[in-house]
Amino acid sequence: MIPRSCDTMVALANATSTGDVIFAKNSDRPVDECQPLELHARQTYADGAVTECQFVSLPEAPVTHRHIGSRPYWCWGYEHGANEHQVVIGNEGLGSRLPEASEPKLIGMEIIRLALERSRSASEAVDVITGLVSEYGQGRFANDAGVRTYDNGYIVADPREAFVIETGGHHWAVKRVERALGISNVYSIETDWERLSRAAASHAREHGWEGARGRLNFADAFTLSRRDEGSGAMRRRRACAVLDARLGDIDARTMMSLLSDHSDGQNADEPFVVDAGYAGGICIHCNADGTGGNTAASLVSELCADGSRLAVHWCALYSPCLALFLPMFVEGELPEALAIGGETPSDDSPWWTFHRLAAAVRVAPDARAEAVREAWAPVQDALSVSAYEMAGEGRRSIDDGRATDANALLTRYMAENTATMLRVATDLLDWLDRLAA
Ligand SMILES: [Zn+2]
Image (cartoon, rainbow, N blue to C red; front, side):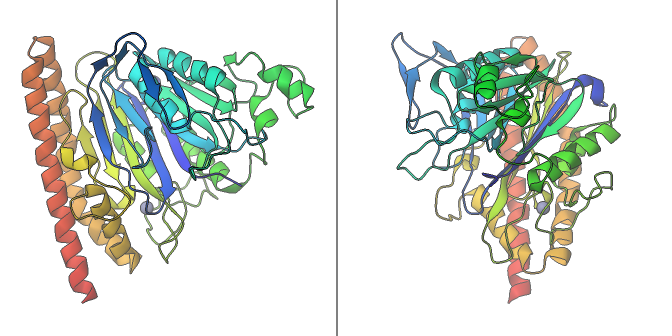
């Protein structure tokens, strides 16, 4: 059984039209699991401080870096996030053949947060993640808190490079990204790993797993089920085909369209499919009766290598095909409203507002989704201009030693955009309510 779904992609500077590294992730979660967006300031800690994760405690780092994270309301960790050093990380649920562990481990989402807090580059994040996986482990483990646990795959990126990390229990493999790729809920690191945990090959050999002879095929060895079948395999094929077809031409809009895509993946090369009635594709929609899973939040990060502007992190709430991608800056203060939301629906939570919007569209998906997309289009177009102006101006202010001015500018910009987004969403909901009446 696939433990859950999600998709993560990255395109390096040699694959994008802008020379930026562009990262993207859809977090697909249970349909009603609220996922607010938070910012945490840099903090310093005294010797002997301890980080309390849900099931494991570990020594705190001397400094945790400023970062934003998209956090399922019940969890300390994140589905995806970005820090002040332009390190971005997202994960995928994987199903390995390792048995469920009886002792407590780290949750994959906690590992994302720990790595964002402790890394100044993608390669440092690889060291943090592989170190934590080796020492504390992750994957399926028994717990009485009702937490669904699974093995994890990650993409970590910075403005210069990106890596895929895949794990099974305490084992892991690391692959360097060459140009552009996507990962999903299937193991994908074969014999093309750059680094491997110490015991991965011998463990696979001892158990007589497939792929254990010669140079270890990590994916063949650790996967529980066939890697070429099922929704995860289909979504990964689709993401890779779209990126391959656009090498050198990929931009943030490409990634937003890919995250919003409803192609069933049978024809991986077809144009983007915008059909909100289809319960599949990279943009996951729940069942018609409101059960199942749904994309809970999305991120497209543009990481700037030449120092000419700040990183832009485009964040969307709930179904990306029905949402606005808001440009966020780690160097400003995020609107506090974005962090509001818990287990039950609340009117003051932007996340729950987009949840309501998706439910209203579901009543008559085709016509209503088109109207929603039309409402967002001019707003998104305007943001696609202003965000880069802000990214440039913010960068120049910080380089001139005016970080406080940059913070104020970006804070105001994000607050205004969030207010606009909520106004349009509320108007759309009023209109959809009137249709229903
Ligand atoms: Zn969709």
